[in-house]
Length: 114
Length: 114
Image (cartoon, rainbow over all chains, first blue to last red; front, side, top):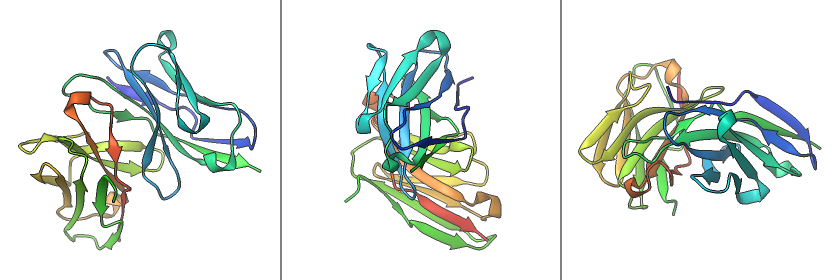
């Protein structure tokens, strides 16, 4: 079965500190992986995506993610967080088949400590 | 104007009432989706449509129906609303030529059933 697990429901980090949000997936074929961010009261914005090639993917707002096939993981990182990064983050997996849909994890809420 | 527009943005309705949430897009995408977001559960797929004549149930379709009036319009109906349908609803679109990447989300409709 296809699934996405985000083990951390809520994380609090200090402004300026580094961040890593965890994501593990289960997918039968070659996965396409995504991270989305949802700011309070807003829709979902795509941060980055991985399809193939270099396993370290750069995204918007200074975020990056690393695909590790052996660990079925796609963790999101940022070297130094800003107060504006406070939001909910969703990891998602999909594929390229004609019937493919995106499956989302349950989300990780990020709070920033001043 | 937004690429994917959802109306209304917020709605409070009474138990047993029929309500329709509307989604329209200017992306020219052929595929459209309705997701529901609940705290701690992430986004769950309600219905999806790969073209005007193709409607499919998602993982949580009970209590919902949809209509694809045109390529650009996809409506979600709750025939008899119940309180546990209180949630944030998102419409999304994608291009079949791009598989499961390239989702564009609307800003969401916050529905409260009292």
